[in-house]
Image (cartoon, rainbow, N blue to C red):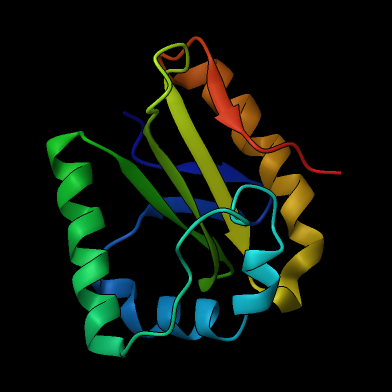
Length: 137
């Protein structure tokens, strides 16, 4: 799977433990915004957790990536963590991958461009036929 993607000044790199403080700050500042983002309404996450619990979550995402069981990317804009993209196998037998993304509330204008860039990236560089990725309005 691709190790990174760039569009404009934005870079997607595999999410790992090294991103913990910035990732934690990004999503905890934007819980209501993330819950309102297409694809997250019916999800269990985000829920309050400690920075230590977040670290364990990031370690699990990094292990999934290493094992090629799922692919989580942090979204960096000029080095700042501004969101995440998750690419995981779908539970729907007719869909290859379930994709979700979020950006910080203070970067909400990036949501649609990120969605468009990721859709193009999935078509161009990933081996998927059908992908479920909640449409942006």
